[in-house]
Image (cartoon, rainbow, N blue to C red; front, side):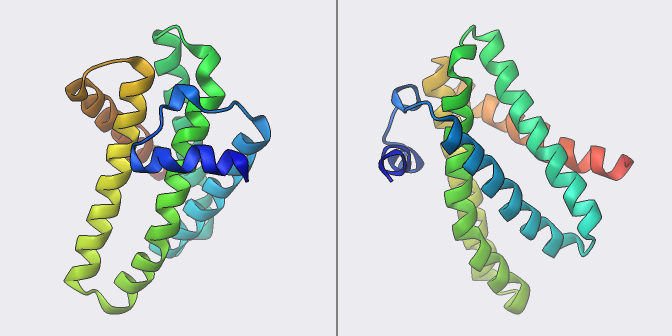
Length: 165
């Protein structure tokens, strides 16, 4: 519970990801939770559980590899568990908020549900940009560009590779 209290403020852009504790157990829990929740959302969108499984698996591997590459190029590989856990944890918190919005969107297709979904995605984007800014120690514009590249590489990359399989 103590680790949760340390990671949660990061979702509100309040903590420095470099100051967070390194915990392999917490990393594994977040990785598993991330896979399960993203699989459920993807399976709901595609109606093909096997395709959803492959796409989420590819997206997870691409996420892990992207963070590894960024930290390798920055010569801060020792931060891998902390930073990957930070990204996964915040993604999980936001995904928990996205699930009811996705259900609402599926049931009613209300314009308000689309706006709320857009805000949640924007929140996730801001958190990833913030984590990269604090980790790589770059300016805001560069962190936004890096976060955009992260989303293109992981989400669109997983979609493209999933379509090839």
